[in-house]
Length: 457
Image (cartoon, rainbow, N blue to C red; front, side, top):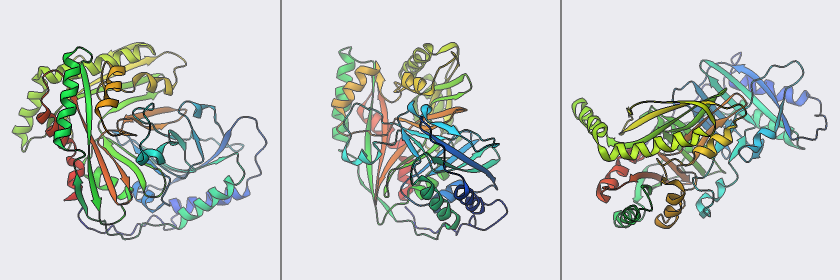
């Protein structure tokens, strides 16, 4: 990673509605609130105030490390950061935690951050243990942008000591600012177990396909980098997002020095009211060195029988998964190209009109994992991955996003990496079908890792 200094943030200045001033006001209001009445159901009170526009990632970088979270949707309409942990819950059980507002207040619903493992049944490696309890988290402080509207909110749970912790955090946020920092150099250390081990895994998957046990399997590999000092995950995400401007951006911090982050092209599901949107993303080519080469590579992807077959498996699974929740469904008749910074994919959109009462956790359970990150049939592919992959994927390729009473936006956590102090482990996968060549798939994963490779140059 090249060295450089970030300019000192000005968001701590006391403008009339700056995040710092609003944090102070919220701290004062919390201190003056009466003690919450005893209730039988778990719940929390939300206080929210509008703020002037600010760079949310810069604000998050200045926030106390250890429990920071971030998500931005692909359209850049929704961006939300969270600091601290007010409440943890299993995804789905969060709906049982009641949101209350002070008398006369009109409040939006709070955002819960979701991050779930790819394979919940597989035992966690030690490196992933700090993330074990972070499936659905309500932050203490939330900074949200909806379009051009910005708001800062605090969530106060019904718990002894929570008020003091929330006030202390707000006061720290009111005083914090991003200091000048030198980003440590990042050097590639290893390509997991190497190409020979990758080839053996691919051949194992091809043997299962030849025996008729699988139609497709998506194998992943890792690449590890070492830094000359502790990595700031918000700074890494900022640089990553500057190079890959399209995609869902996410960050999950699980204790000081541990974080998972990425910029993914793939939506798992979004919900607004009773409308759900999902998509199939499968089939890959690199970007071309110029416009002509780029166009030719895209045309070869659209014309590839192998890639179209791989893509159709994902479309088929998404259609089947949503059929149990949908009153009606609309699917793009043909895939389109989606071009990212380093690769291009086939993409097919699926829109469903949901049956009344369908919950977000039911949508995610029905859709995850898709054949785009597991294989087909999915249960057999998952079982095969436990034997063919020597490492625990953890949150890689799992659901990641945000949910609230108003809606949900859940992405698939690919093009991602885990940070552990001064090391970064990046992940990439490739879909293996009949006719796949191990060397070609190794190169494909290399193209997908370019976003992290560029951070080291």
